[in-house]
Image (cartoon, rainbow, N blue to C red; front, side, top):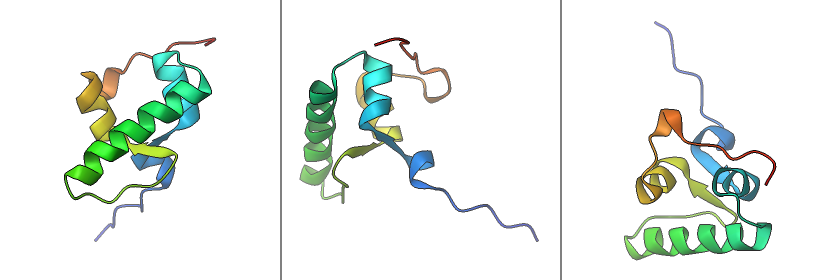
Length: 75
């Protein structure tokens, strides 16, 4: 019986560099986005990690298709 490989943090979360690239925001603005999204999750009783946001929630809030999320280059 095959087991699924463990997911890493990079598989489950976006870090500030990812948010910067996807939204084309500065580092400070991207941290504010992450903080805001994490606050929403905390209000729902979810655990969060500073400096990263759950990919699935990020896609949901920004209306992005997880497989086809637009990525801005050179921001």
